[in-house]
Length: 396
Ligand SMILES: C[S@@+](CC[C@H](N)C(=O)[O-])C[C@H]1O[C@@H](n2cnc3c(N)ncnc32)[C@H](O)[C@@H]1O
Image (cartoon, rainbow, N blue to C red; front, side, top):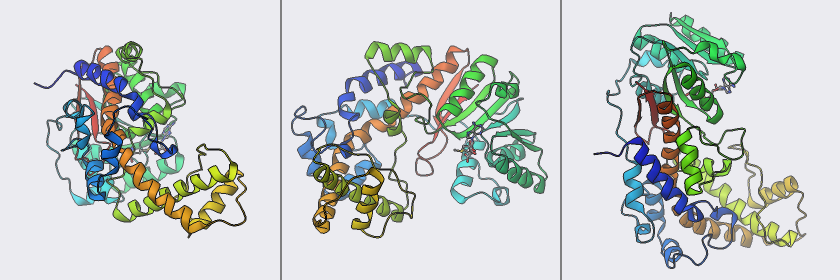
């Protein structure tokens, strides 16, 4: 029998709190092993792993993991095992996906066919161009109101809906504004696919107040105004206090950091950017005479300078660091790649706690709705390869 939401929530709270000294520190920012001398042998085992084993464990952290000799791998695996939703995902006609990217369209097909619509009127939350809303309108033959604050997206989405003859209205609405609650009511179901932190938090709070049904795939838990996480549910707040579990915005970001589903070219590009950052980190420590990590702004894909020296000059300028006149670029670059190999191995510890943290955050949302009197399911709506943000929270 699978554990109840509350049992899962409680057990995950215990494990996340118990092991926070291991999963919280960022190996990227430290020259030493972040967990120091505790758990002897763990770092040596990780550092000895061949590249293909590192990649395998990044993709499947719970399978045949050498970390099981030190860490509660099987317990964590059992707690994150969720069943796929009850209704099968149906493939929808290709022409319904007009104007939608291929991957997004597959996600929408999987999500839309799992929404339990019943007699409810439908609202899409943070709708973008209303791709999900149009699909729901067609699939369930009923009008949909899409809420989106960017008017250009509303206009583009309205154009698409009208061309396809669908009763979809894109409404310009800031969902964080005081009047956003006017779209919610007990006879409404709100569907939200990949709504970020505060945006879906707002939806859940309003749904709990108004009795509105919800079908939510949460995303980007760290996109919040608050620097420190305050659990949404009373149960979550009690468990955090009981176990001394504290979560910063940076901790929340771990729940959605994935490398494995990106295409190979993107992964290679990301590896180079990370190796260069780590090489620059060594250089800036020397140049500043301070053995401390210095965060460098992120760079949009395609904006990475052509070579390592160019990257370091850019980074130094961003951070006001004066570089020496003569630098052995090749040596620092090689050291950056070496550090990347080390960091990706040490980070396997964090990989192990990533999905447990995400499921814990989802359970906090589930418990908020349960505390408001809803019956709630937590399942997956698609394979992780299609999107790692594949959790579906639904009221019934
Ligand atoms: C991550 S996208 C998700 C869009 C769509 N549901 C999807 O899955 O492609 C988030 C959307 O929320 C919109 N958004 C952001 N802040 C908002 C706000 N305060 N009120 C309404 N919409 C907002 C953005 O413009 C964007 O279209």
